[in-house]
Image (cartoon, rainbow, N blue to C red; front, side, top):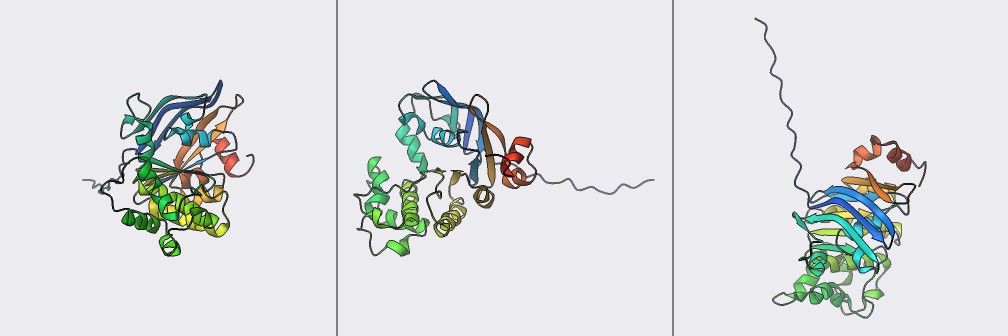
Length: 272
């Protein structure tokens, strides 16, 4: 009788449910459509990078994820953005509550110049009326520790946030976003205005923060995406200048074995 060897069935790890999901997400500036039918599953406790050439809709897509796009006059959004299976664009959903759950850090550090470092950190809590029952001193210390800034500023919390260096200001803005305890943190080219040392600190910070937060970052820097992102989404605008999601997957696959020739051409510098 022929004996057959036992073959061990490989264990395939189940993917967690998305923290944030888009369903045919589209956006317009007046009559111009900026992005079209973007379907994207953003996994929890991962860093997802959005890459692509200028004008492909990266930042527009990012701002749609927490309803910041609609603050620009004449804009509109189609499709859905689902946070815990709730459409954040549903008529009953308060956009202020959305932006508390999905925080955002912008390209240029923007601490409130007339506020102290301390008041910058708690500004979001005060805006949303969530200071009641909170130990603000603890909130400030914990938030600044989360961005590795506490030891640098603990003796000057009453100084203006604008007195800090560019890299420190950006970390202060991240601390301000974290103080309201968001579930997702969006970062729109957070290092583009920073020097290499400050950039390294922000990248190192992202690696630590993803244990507690889901992070989505827009970047023009291919090396940065390869260093910090677990997943990468490549956007490209076609002849109509409408941005579309071309390819999305694990970063190591995207950068070594992309499935679309256009992705390979962009990553290898043939255009963009």
